[in-house]
Amino acid sequence: MIIGHINFLNVLPLAYGYAHVAKDLQIVRGVPTFLNGELKAGRIDLSNISSIEYARQSDELLILPKICVRADDAVTSIVLVSRKPIEKIRDEKIILTEKSATAQRLLKIILHESYDAAPEYVTRAVSVEEPVDDDATAALLIGDDALQIFLHRPKNFYVYDIGSEWKKLTGRQMVYALWAVRKKFVASEPETFRATYKKILQAFEFGIAHKADAINSVLPTKPFTFDELDKYLGGAIKWNLTAESLDALKIYYRKAAALKLIDAEPALEFADV
Image 1 (tube, helix red, strand yellow):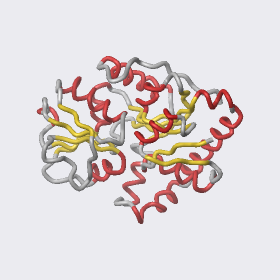
Image 2 (cartoon, rainbow, N blue to C red; image 1 turned 60 degrees about the vertical axis):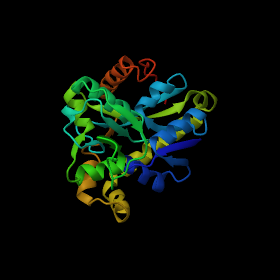
Image 3 (cartoon, rainbow, N blue to C red; image 1 turned 90 degrees about the horizontal axis):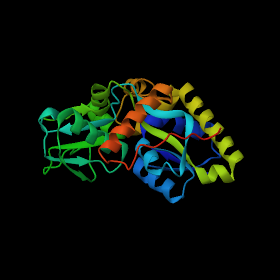
């Protein structure tokens, strides 16, 4: 079984667990949009993916129970960096990171419903060093880059946490990523799938139990302190998929469908584990 792994700090405990108690798993690493495509093409069998991607591939996928990436309020690793206050954005150009599908649509919902804005959206690479290109008013960043900007805010820019904006709009938490498996694989190799799922849970549990070691393992290569990552992992970011978080996810899908950002609100179908 070939497994995708989004190579962001928000799943650092799982990455640490993979390296220590699940070394036999065959893992492909990448950003969300890459793994979304690999799963759709059938080149990987199971992955954590952008939650919006489940809506786009729901006919082919099953959700894995118990695990997700979510935030009750501020997510701190999805931010809009703007030259002007968010309430003054109207039809200006906004650059969307090419790394995430969920965050792109989340921002469009928020700007439309909360601020009655209709910007021109352009998808291309963004960077921490130059977060907003000269031809744009704002840019959406995700992952480690966004976390760096949230914690070390650039001068002369407004920074908005998209999780906080979603909470303000809906009063709900947000599920940013799910784990999903291809239906065809489960149908053909159910025991292999269940054994793999068990290993993923074990790896996650190991990483969470050894969170301090996981954080220390990446500090030499990351622009963060131990305390910053300690507060982020398990603080802002949570990994348990609850009934309340699923209700919030349905609201996200409903709003995305209403704005025609997805074809339809999907039914949530879970793998038998």
